Amino acid sequence: MTYGESDSPTLADVEAVVRENVSGHVDGDRHEQGKQRLLASLRHGRQSTARQVRRVVLLAVALGAVAGGGAYLWKQRAAARLSYDVAGGLLSDSGYVRSSGPSGARLSFSDGSRVDLQDGARARIAAVDAHGARLAIENGHAALSVAHLPGAAWYVDAGPFVIQVTGTQFDVDWSSYDDTLSVDLHEGSLVVSGPPAPTGVVLRAGQRLTAHEGRLSIEALELAVQAAEAPPALEPLPEPDPALADPLPLPSADPAAAAHF
Amino acid sequence: MVSRPQQIRARLVALPSPTLAQADDATLARAASSGDPRATSVLWDRFSPLVRRMLRRTLGPTAEVETLVQEVFLRALRQLGALPDSAQLKPFVVSVTVRVLSAQLKRNRVRRLFRLRTPWHGADHVSSTEPGARTALAALYRILDGLDADARLAFTLRHFEGLQIAELASATDASLARAKRRLARANARVQAAVSRDAAFSAYAHAASLGDVP
Image (tube, rainbow over all chains, first blue to last red; front, side, top):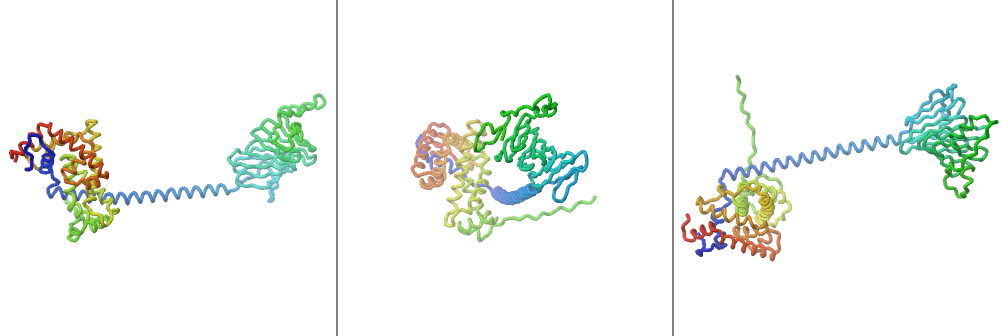
């Protein structure tokens, strides 16, 4: 014993009581048990690590496969052209479409868009891609319903005019005999460009655009229909409403040109 | 009724290697870090008494020590690969033990704050069977429970394990000056507390007179 002899214990007494009574010794069995427990933990840890590595690799492979498959499908879909078929009409190899009966012809596209050609109307499918098509109305009346999808891009050519569509319902009437274009817009909006409006004019739902002899006018569709149905001798055609026109900015901004180009 | 033959499963047992048992620290560290179970076995034989003693003397002879011994070895074996060849294993094992101890002391302090820790009994690992020694140890570890983790580590490593101030600073990742300040603070508090503690004083007095076995 190395304890001090004073009444008050010292730090040396504290050291002594611990050093003499607390050791790190255990019997042989407990020592061996501890060793086996450690070795077992190490084995288990290595197995767990290997399992985790396998899981991570499998997960990475699965994610890669899903991502690759998704990218492939997306690319395929993006690259795939819209398909279409014709009912009630004739379709030539060059894309020329003509109705074969009094009920007209219907063009149905794989994205859900439809084009109904009235009896006697003629059109040509100029181009088709993954996002839309370019149709040329050669003569007659066509009712279009274009599916509003992301990235949709449709164009309708009528003589010198081009109608740019993203998703809407409208009727197009083009007369190649007197070069008259009429567009009735029922839903959405579209842009019509041509010689009277080279930069294009925006047409909104409920409006009718008429182009004839180098002049372009826009009026409310309802008024235009009423005027068309009324006897010409009793009621004059209403004047075009300049307020309904919504032209795109033109280099020479003439307010009168908004209604008459 | 046909009795099924008893299945006999082979079990690998890591036998101590005579070569590794006498190997220097660097060789042993390399072998253990490469996953050689014989090296792990030698490491356990060589250092587990030291680790267990440090844990018991710092925390008190409590039942949770064996789990902590395992934790020290698992940590040490994970870190052995990064140990330079020239480094000595013993200081490395001591430093790992100190880190485990520091974390455990902080956990224990939180538990005491919320009164979650079971009372200290001290029956299992006290070599003396003398009741006075048990009482004195119980009193001492109650006093040590009042110190913060850093001060307690400084006190136990210096006084119970005999580390020099420089070793103490190195093991606790502290500067020399900070290690000295911690130790001085701990010395003062323990000295004052044991002087006031009747049970510890009585035991120390009896021991000084040779009245304890």
